[in-house]
Length: 388
Image (cartoon, rainbow, N blue to C red; front, side, top):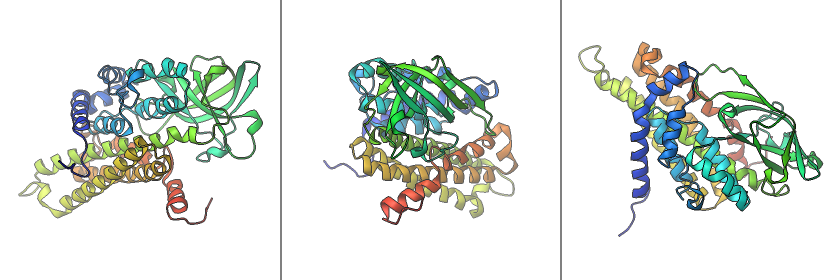
């Protein structure tokens, strides 16, 4: 028997169905209520962890599901499509879990991965800095050896969810490598470490997961806080950044699905003149266009995840960037069309689209801007001269 191309294995289909059912039992109303009350999605996170959904990409010997990024991306996409996305999935199991799996010592894997997999702890990720922006080669957070310890000093910005994390994976450079090409040194820092502080950054969109500026003031760490090799090179960092982009695409695609599903349902039932509004091409065609662009985005994401799971870091990097770009675009387009389909109701709190309209816009900016993605594709995919 031959496998039908572009279809997912039965196990992933079943995984999607199970996640959709669980996340759907919480839904947008749960997330909206938690957001209004300035509370975290603790119950949903714990439930997802209890059912094994948070750690599907973690190896089985460390308490995970033994799958890959394609499985984890499916989990986040389905949760977002059900109206209950979990931003920290992008960070804890995808970025941190992957880096520790690929670069950590056996002791580090035994220590961190089971807790990441079952959701009993959350690990944040800190790379962006106030003056470096998207240019990770300009980061100034430094790690200095002091006997058997490391001392970290620097600042980070727009760090998601550190207030609900037990530890944060900090990207730094060693003190003797402040100049020249970046050789990232990655450290797990407990969030209760002396010298680690953070300040909330108010945002115009509202979500349970908050953004923070982080201050690292001579934080002392044991030698085994270092993940990987201090001279291991950029591949250690990109072991986590490719999954980050894939998960960003999954988040955006799921959000687009949520918006499209609600817009289609509204177009099928809302009657203003003689027939429901979905009979009019001015309503139907934008929705059809969103559907086409959404399926294109999902295919690119699935290819990126497949390359990542196959160990093709360069290929995964190319398509992960494309997937993140496509996801950001379709999320914005889908929310815009969904709001327009609803008319004035599109911005009414009851319908749950207004805040998502702003949140979708974030997909064009983070975790990497679409302009930097276009730079990457122009240079690496098309072979054009470097422009920055």
